[in-house]
Image (cartoon, rainbow, N blue to C red; front, side, top):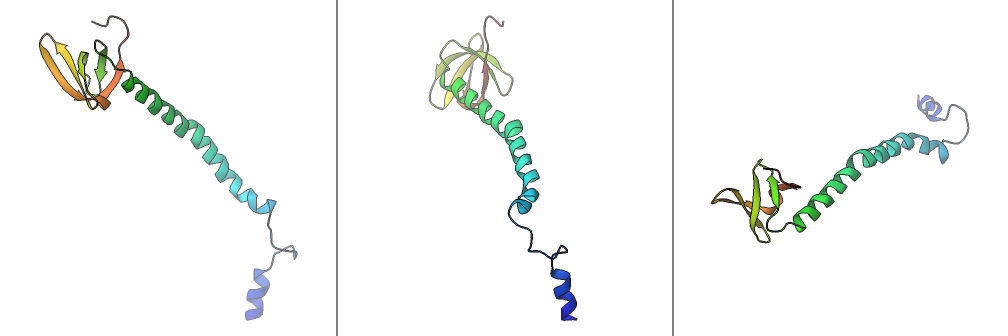
Length: 109
């Protein structure tokens, strides 16, 4: 019975077990999927995060912004962590700096 197990474990071609380039053929689709995943998902997300970080670093008083909650207002004060925006005459709201989505260009009234 032990002889049958050894006979079944041998390579069907009778030669040495597959290795080298033959073993890499199994990993090629996995490597290809990772490369595609990187270029379609990871790289664009890193680029978007970098652009948002630059946007937050370049905020200044007088900029008209849109927040993550959908508020549109003009910046009246900025600190390291917060931004105070005026959403209407004499109505000011303090938000976290990271909640700023975009700076509006031009007159958006």
